[in-house]
Image (cartoon, rainbow, N blue to C red; front, side, top):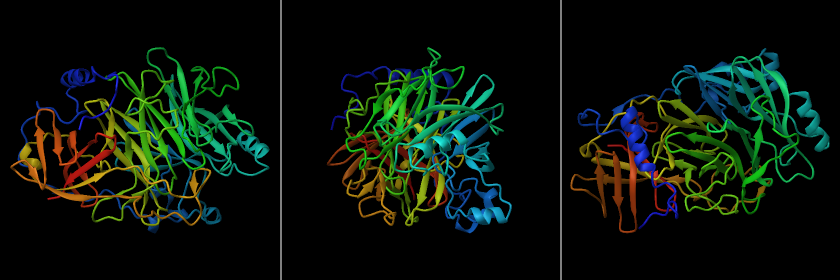
Length: 511
């Protein structure tokens, strides 16, 4: 089956660019390089997970210093010097503010974490001691005195030695919202409020939540992407000197939307620029955050769009777009995950990228764990992510013999749209996944003769790319790399890539 990526071929030079860049820098972007020394025969190596998934035992308020990878919702992360700083919505499982006050726990707003390795995280407290008064006043004035009980979806942006922290305050289920910005000379604060960036209310088409800011390296212009199921996602130009909109009260222009904003949820834009591919990638989240939340991606030549999907369609045309990168899934020996979206892209330097997002531990889907997945780029220029969370595995190359053995494979599919939603979210009491809403793994054995049951497989050792040919389809150019098998607590061989319809395909060798 011929894959349909870009009908007019705007990525024809990507393969050459990637190869030239990799050879020049010795980086791992599309698999490991053939120039690496030949490895010895590989077998999965037992390695304990760095932390458990179930954190109910440390969920009470007095254990907050142990929340390094727990209670993470809507993460945004930047590498500053040799440290990764992460900011997230102040969503807490088993939150009890009365208990916190009694025990002297300094609860605040916008959770802050830091890490040296993207694996071990220290909980650094909260950015703000209170919700900024102008945000509360605006939301209450537009929502009959309701809302403004929390701060959502922060985003950090450095500028000439200072740090700008964008955030949003809203009334749930309404487009009564306020995106504000604060500044500090340290990524750990303290923060000084600088004012409103965008605010929305009665009569506005859009919703001022979920900010993501990027600088165009060619022009120096700043752009903020934001929005939700109310009207879609928008892009507005910012003034780099102030961090606020270039024009007062400017809401920007539409960049993405879905057909039925109440049922077909769309939110959480995050944008990155890839300097080798010279493309901008816009990551978005579909569907209800507690259950079938999933990540999609589109690309553009400019930060302000238009953004195109896997089939070259503009993502503001209301089509349900692909590629789809993450969605609820379950490998063997684990209850699985839901809510795998609202991502933040991390530039780790040296050509390596990662995606951070929440994962809700099934089957109850209440505990919110941090997932950090390594990101790769396919030969056709699409970002894809690891099937497993990052645990510090060193890059290495593999031989065909290393792939021989038993594998678990998952196809990330679009969740069925059968739920009754309100304002893009599930109704109370419907937080469990239903049948067909969680992608399950299947087993396949790669044999030395190039067969795998009724399928065939081959491995390009130079490019570290795997091809699987089944009677129904060919799945080509799957990226092979080393990684941590979280469910089995081993180091093993992984693959990731896209099928011909833009669905992620994940695999890991288990024996």
